[in-house]
Length: 234
Length: 275
Image (cartoon, rainbow over all chains, first blue to last red):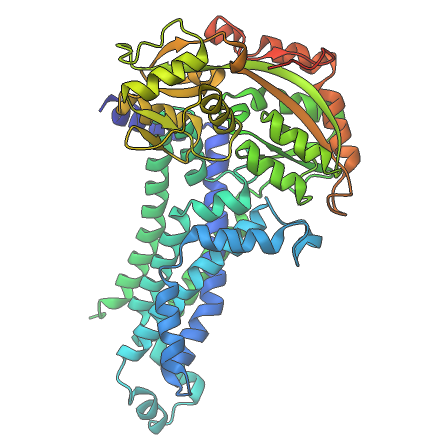
């Protein structure tokens, strides 16, 4: 139990004491996971909406694949991306392995199916006649789509939060494609694993608590934005 | 909708604005090495000095010796620092590696519960292994392809024991984790001395000093025969540096202040030890 208390004290000390390495690790964690989430949103929102709104052969298979992808094991993604980025692999010429870019790629791959599946579910929840009605009221297709997304914004934000939560907390892919290089690719999760393997449990717990804090901060911002709009103005 | 876009834009800003990671170094090499050199903190001590002396940044991949050698074989690393002599010799004989140089040694130790139910204190190591197997006390093995696991297998073989059954448990994890599992299960395990000293986890050192417990580290430089993106000049720079006087002195000093004994003994230029 002392370890938990020590961990809490260390987390506060590292953050408030302005420990440069800890702040750098925290900043890198945010940079990598937020960038991956944004990429996943840019790819996944149109894809999820398209799957929800159009009908084509194999649509249900695509949905099932996206739903399966929500449980994509980070270690498998990490291994896959590692093999692609190896010097001897197809993308080896770029020298990306063990860089933050490689981690962003792997985390975007993890996050995209989550966004696709949750966006598809969110859009499907809106009344199927919604688009037709909007267009009947004279809205252009683009405006009708914008209104549709407005209608589904809370679940859309939830999709972003789920994707961010998945990538900021994963360790398997970050370790494999990033290599946990000090000052370069070390993020909070891999730092916690290293501290554990060195027997520095309090430090590991401190990293875990910092991770929780930043995840909470990001989700708080997203939730406040979503809820502010959800309450109808009187 | 507008606010969703605003939030996304904000996220992009945060993502781009946060402190940029170190730009990929002008010159960087990939070092594949064992977990013991990283977990003991030795590399944190050596690598900044190497970078200052040579200008090479080092990307360290800390894995078991078996995996490190495999990365070398595939041309994914420029230089290896490993401790699995038999596997290394076989690997060098394949012809894709350059020089293989002696760097340092420490030793393996048999550790276990203070009560020592198998009675291995002060016996020869082969005898100790036999006693553990006969007593039915738990033995926790790394069970990976690490240099420590390779040595453990060799020790069982020398003792004429085929380990297996309920008393023999494999973690598949690093040395620190394996020590903790052994402590929780009041079992025995084989550990390198450096990791044991830095995290003994409540286990007692019971058996040491047998020549069969010598733990020798070599540096192996890779050549372009392993893959055309290997940087032989980087591997050579690292091998020359770590066997040079400045690095050797650092190795000899490392851990002395914290553990009152050095964790590694520098060996560069000495004749190959015969285990």
